[in-house]
Amino acid sequence: MAESHEFVSLSMQQTPPGHPFFVNLDTNYRCIACRDVLRDAVQTLCGHRLCEVCAFGIFEEPPPWRCPSNDDTCVPYLTKEEVFRDPCARREIATLLVYCSNKDRGCKETMQWKQLEGHDLRCDYKAVQCSFVTNGCDVCTTRQNLEDHLQQCQYRNILCAYCQEETIFNQTQDHESFRCRKYPIACPNDCGATNLRREDLKDHEQECPQRQSHCKFSNMGCGFSGSMEAVRKHEGESLDQHLQLTTVYTASTDLQSMAIHRELQDIYERQHGLQKSVNRSLREVEDLRKEAEGTKKTIKNIKLQSAEQAERMIYVERRLEDAARKDVLEKNERDIQGLQNLQTSISDGLRLLEQGGDRRLSAGNIDSQLQYQERKIGLLDVRFVELDLRLQIHESASFNGVLMWRIQNYRRRKCEAINGKTLSLYSQPFYTSQFGYKMCARVYLNGDGMGKGTHMSLFFVVMRGDFDALLPWPFEQKVTMMLLDQDTGTKNLSDCFRPDPASQSFKRPQTEMNTASGCPVFVSHKMLETKTYLMEDTVFIKIQVDTDDINPP
Image (tube, rainbow, N blue to C red; front, side):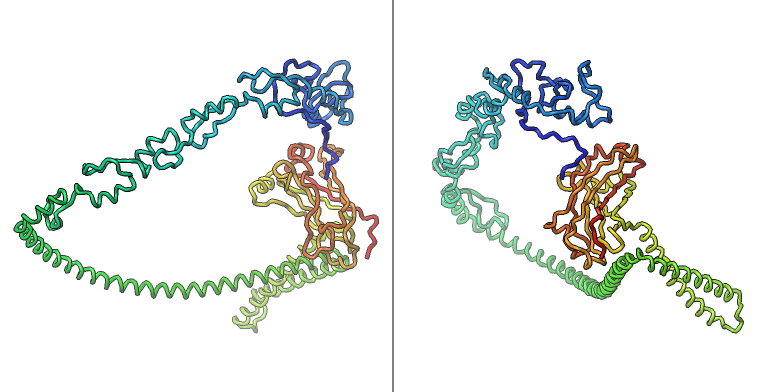
């Protein structure tokens, strides 16, 4: 939905992209504001040329607006209607001769600006990254030298000569020394085998005649080790020594067994004590579990009570809408007056009781009467607050199709929207008539959709009302949304639309309110946050619904 207050220029022919070096840039093709080449050229009524963006900048300042050239040929004051697209200049600028973007790398070609982008795609001097950048190569060369570099790149992929696995060229030595499973190596036991594949080494060591071995009595204290043949010879010649080691080891084992027995006894005693602690903890856990179940029941009851209170609040909100009727309003006023009189009477009675006016009442009866009267006073206070709230809603309700919405604390509320705390705000309901459509407004101070972060978004919402069954559907009344000027009152920003009959947003509501419909880019933050529209941290929004052709039910 277009904003009627914004200066919008729809370019017929865009300026080519980029910032090239021109062979010769005539002053006629320079912007009188930024002095750079004209981009999407526009022309003022006085004949001067500007970039489209520079023209936007002029009208973002407070009026009066003047031509940046400011010479004798300029019009006194410039208006938005006096700035036009300049298709001729745009075509001529697109054909200006420029140097190739790769001129510094050796390209000598020149071409029209509009041809530069296509030339860059095929230029042999264009900078390209080495294809092996993922392997660690950070070389950047030209397209014509890329093939020569790839053939010599230290990070190129090659196949291992032994295992045929792919590896990086400058890591070949490391691969062969540590990871290649088929690389030939010598036996570490110096048995004479020198051409073993690394993957076969483990099997060879099990059969190697020079494999180092230990005496079978090593766990008893024998420290002899050597080749398998030497170990067998040692075991045959050292029987007496091994028998003596066995005797000493057996005696040491008996002593260790006795120590272990004593440690086991201590462990059993500690285990018994821990068992008692565990049993005590289990009993405490069981008590806590029962207590937790009781707490869960209490929480469940509280949730049920909260749900009942919520239902009662919804019921009260619906009943409050009846406050707009004159007869209900008068009845409420009479009820309030009666409640005030009754409260005065009860207060006088309590004062007499406190002064001992009725001597026939016992102390116990007085306490009972006091408690009874206090309960009645509490119920009357609740009723009084409810009626007061209904009167306040009635005073702020509108029944002529016009909503005046005052949004205070704008900057704090916008920060809450940016932080995700409160994304949107709803206005109070308003009506086309006493028995007409019920509506409200919704605003996103930090924007919604394509306006998020840059604009304030404003939407119109159709709500479910008590008289929907008597009204024609879908809703087809013209809606005008305005941001009010608080400075001079002459620069209100407005946008209007007629509802789409096929949209679900304007059919008879089946829930409390329909989907909002409006303008995601209603006004930019830059324009909104000026003294014209934001004053004393407050903005005013007006929604006006056309009620001329509505037939009352």
